[in-house]
Length: 390
Image 1 (cartoon, rainbow, N blue to C red):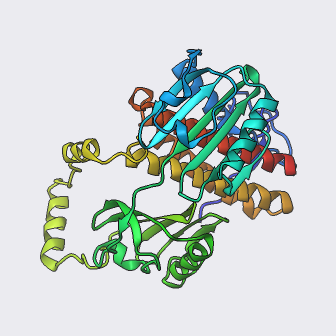
Image 2 (cartoon, one colour; image 1 turned 45 degrees about the horizontal axis):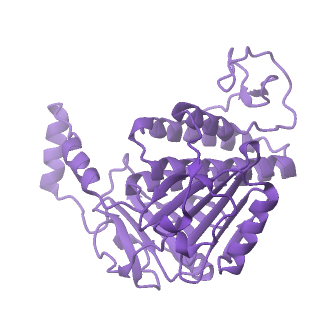
Image 3 (cartoon, rainbow, N blue to C red; image 1 turned 120 degrees about the vertical axis):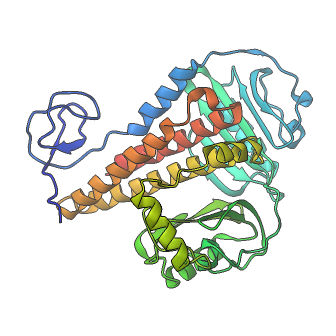
């Protein structure tokens, strides 16, 4: 077992780094040795937000708006200000910036939305409000003090049909959910991703327990609305409660695992052919052309590509786990075993950041950029709340 590196605190940004590191990987400052005391973690996600906004060069495009001209505007109260900037307007999603809005006007608008029925599973703080109505429409409000801007976003309910749970491939390893309503985003022998409706939080928790009993309990991570775990047979699951009685279920075969997915065991002949190709140096290469075509033809989810939406949800789920770790550390800062866990999490964070680097800024449409900023803002707030609670 590899020896865990001794960690010290960067005096410039307060992040834990290896004692042997001459330059802090977080802020670039030169490393001067110091003793390991109570760690106050820098909120790295805020940097990501600034980077995204800076890259796209946020510029106001204020103009007079006519509220009733928008596709979904009839579902919401009309704001007091008629100066705004339209971000998205379609049958599935409406997003607009409303300028010249004071904080009190934002609070008044929020109250009107609550009276209009947007109060299901609501989340509220000083600058954000999120909730559904009984018909499944999702409302998100944000207020930015710096330029007196209110962001209003409304998403229509996800379209779901009768769900036919797969009986082969990796999906066959999972328990079948109680609900038979949902929409499959991705299905293959090695990967399965689905949204399941009519699943309140109690049934989501019951499903998490069923998965655990099925063997998905290796190296597990669990929060109030997410669950991630491995199986001894080499598969990984990621469960998440999305809200409004919708949960997401993802399972995939580990890329470095040689165990075949359930119902897809290789034959001796196949194993022989694989061994022969390795000897000859003819390793299988992914069909990137086919993948690209498949991605281009994939049905959009709320104006976003499914693979992008899945990636952002996974990104947010990771930082939910990260906040849980921070709380655990705050309760017992003398537990040196947490350093190893922190190192693992930072390694995973680096891997996730690398994957997100593959999404070039120019490839994001307006809906994806807006959702990216929304996720980053939620993460930043949760991290800030976690640090302040220490």
